[in-house]
Length: 253
Image (cartoon, rainbow, N blue to C red):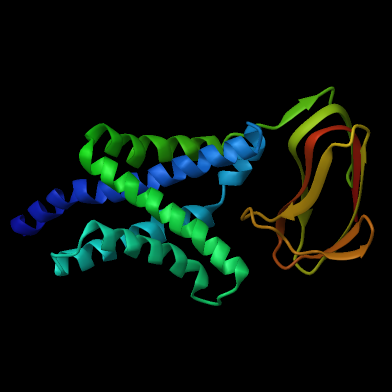
């Protein structure tokens, strides 16, 4: 038992290099998303708040890295070139395992690039202790904290609401506004929504359930959607704006 505990303790720094590699990759991805969004914090947070992406980076990425190290350990003469090739293969494999076409090859190329960034992160973390702890703890925790901050911006927001309607006018809206609706199982909710943009800004509309998952709706006509309630609870009608000025109205029954 003592020997096992000792080996587990000795293995912690090794595992931290893997988490640092994943954290470094998330750091690079986050910076890319931030630049693409034009340093729009709301859009940036929406871009990185994807648990599937985190699962790929910290789950699939770390697992593949462990298997690659095991292969290298079993075959001591394996050089760095072979190790790099294995990381590239792992990056492609996630996307082309189901089908090979132009889209999966492109996605695989991006995956291979991300794999190399991951590997470079593990290399740096094995050389520098400060790098290891910053990217295995500080960076991931910082991103998770940011994901829980609402960076929505509103100016001159005026709202009028009743039991089944919500109206809002504004000089500036960038982010999201949620309207909670209590619903019972078996009910059908009909949603009417209209958005007036006076400056050409973008907007969107969707519904989330209590688990923060998108709810499927049926389009009846332009601006009219129907939602079949499967589970009772509070559903959130979400209206989004992208640097927009104007107004919107939502009605439900």
